[in-house]
Length: 174
Image 1 (cartoon, rainbow, N blue to C red):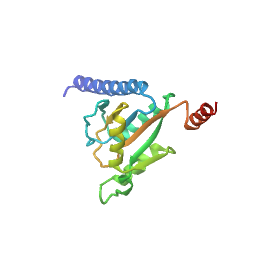
Image 2 (image 1 turned 60 degrees about the vertical axis):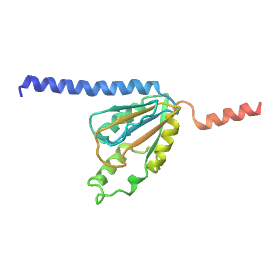
Image 3 (image 1 turned 180 degrees about the horizontal axis):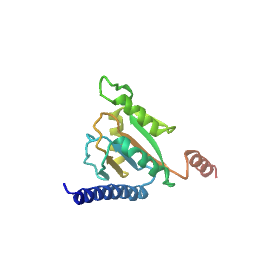
Image 4 (image 1 turned 180 degrees about the vertical axis):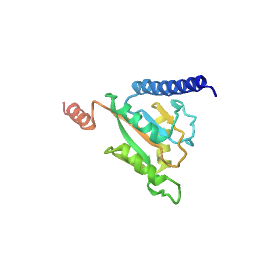
């Protein structure tokens, strides 16, 4: 392959990655509380639900998780409630080669963020229910490990549950 063609392929590849990430950022800017964003493995099914959109990104979960978390952290209108599949906790290297190192790396990237665990089927039930009312964006990676997907329920970034409770109490008291 000529050096020129190789350079052009590299330029096209990096432009494509930036365009997909740009597209995802634009979509996140439109989403708000009660929407969902999923960062999933390659086998995650494309669901036939209105309001659910799937975007394929290059790279695995660990390649995509840092920039995605940064995107959410820099979106002042939303804050994520993070869920993972409960099944992931029980997987080990004897069952899935490399899963131990993967879980350690993912936990390092997530840092101090709270992650709630739900059984995989329960997450699907929640998404089926919510997907009928609110937009769900699925970001599909090239990762091929089971039960590693992360599910981000978006909450309001500038108004919290305590503030809402106080408001409701004030309204009911007047």
